[in-house]
Image (cartoon, rainbow over all chains, first blue to last red; front, top):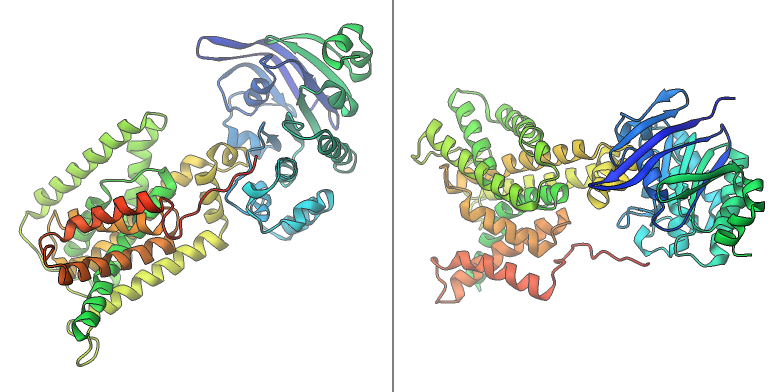
Length: 237
Length: 292
């Protein structure tokens, strides 16, 4: 089966500062790939480049179609949901309004309310807080909301930027368990960026190691996990 | 007591003018997070278009919606043509353009329709609402229209998808893009709506203050004070704020001898400063609550 996302020779820079030096990787249909690397390696930039939030060079193919010239809105409409770092919820809007916004590109109708219910099934905490302003939620709840909002798009690919960002280990584990469920139940492909390598490798099929804007290692998640060098540098045991 | 009541009612009537302008101010503030200095001049220009159509003999209740539609398209077009290209420019560039628009609309109105004062008829008729009433027919109509506009806005932002998208784009443009909202289109829509509301305000005000190119100068200031008082993010707050400014202005003019008729304008400025010092979010403005 051909990959759902194929990135070839992706380059990006902020002004004079080159952040990505031609990286290539892919995400399989229904699979989960993870980009691992230290702070400043270019992980977040990679996701932003895929979504067209920054200027980029190189080939990005989504489901057989080149998307590297499209605007962010057009890319989203093709079924790529980005859960940004720091969650990016609409803080002054209610939880339910945030979820409705996730389905903004879909035709109006009953399925949307059904999908909101499905999100509440994955995240019961959000149901309790449905009328609350998103900004009043705890960090973990906001992360849940951001993921739920992404699901409302009925995405074929989800880009997750540091889902563990600023969260207690317990909550982080909860969120990754839910992501594993989402992968199984909804068959959504995912590209996960993480600093917490052991968590990410837990749900990923493939992993890519990125260092100062270049991919230095790629392979099956299992292989990467067993690699001595990776263990010492990223897993700490 | 009689005088006091009378002044309050008169204040509410003028307040309706400010409330309507304040609504337009809130609308544009939501869309661009700036105040558009040219807002009043745009409204004045719309009113001239209405006057011209009335001169041609079109019936008032045809002219009214027509001018609102034209103003909407005009506001939308200004955003697309003038502001879209400088989207990422610093605030000062925008301010320079606001001032330019101000001068352009002001001069063009004078150039096309000259500077003599024109009278615009009231669609609600002259005279008091009923014999002996403290409030005139036009004032009552004006308050009614303002409340209808407010209700329509509320319905639009609460129940429609586009309304929700506009609010989302205002809160967090980047995330709005990530859910597929075309943010710059929302901004243009905000411009169109602000311009349309301004047109309503202009057409309602003109029968009271007479039509001339500078008619909105001080009114925009009062409207701005109303919007700040109500909290720049809340349409309901803007309307309440507008009414309060009208009442305060009238009472101060009557009971504080120093102020009289001439010093009324600084009251608006005083209110703005006072609100910003004491309660910067305004009466109904949303304080952003953020847990991290």
